[in-house]
Image 1 (cartoon, rainbow, N blue to C red):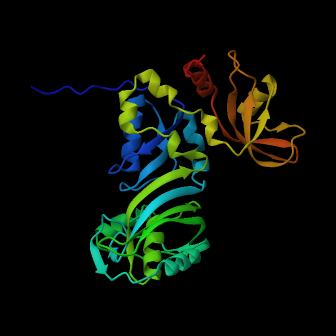
Image 2: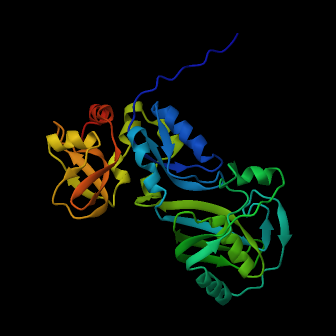
Length: 324
């Protein structure tokens, strides 16, 4: 007897889900699972995490996908363990071992080497990454046994905290907390630190603790999300404007709000601002109404990414009731 598949009835869902991505799933697999649980029509994420990494993965639904690109520029914080003495093909525990060396460095040498990686540095992107060369991800070249030339990329390491170190025993390692700019490859950083210590190394653990204003204490796991009722899952969504925390705020009256939503610039006595979150008159229940993003130049409010009237209506209709 052939098993019948259940078709999920999709619906408009708008907001941001802070997911604690589990080990073993790609970012897209985690996204598709959350999208299915929410029955959302449209979804995207704000940058990928490796399958062997866990932690903060903001997922955007509906109108929030319009602002996901802004969050790609956010600083990130990671906790990682660098296993010293063993170098692998992928710079993490998933790869094949290509070299083993004794670990003879001292704690003082570790501190000195970590200091070298503080501030602006250049990294060569790993072959096992999603970065594209001639329209093809590097990891596809790597799977075919090919290595292609990669240009160094400048990133910034804001802070490296040595949380623990074990230089002897069967598994010498460093446990680090790293705060860095967008585009930083922690696998490459761990491998480079091992190389600088003269013993090589690879990542045996990687967890994203924070990205921009979001941290892992705010997140929910897929198992927890699945255990909730449908209404409870929607309550876990942050509003779309949570992606615009550093934006200046401008509130427009009814007439200006309508014109702004049509893409028309508005004039006012606003100071020049590169990033502005624009709101219209409050809704009937008193909640704020996001219209979109903009920037101000020469007293003109210039539209950026705009919500559609239907999206604004759907957000107001599906907003959870405030708890007393």
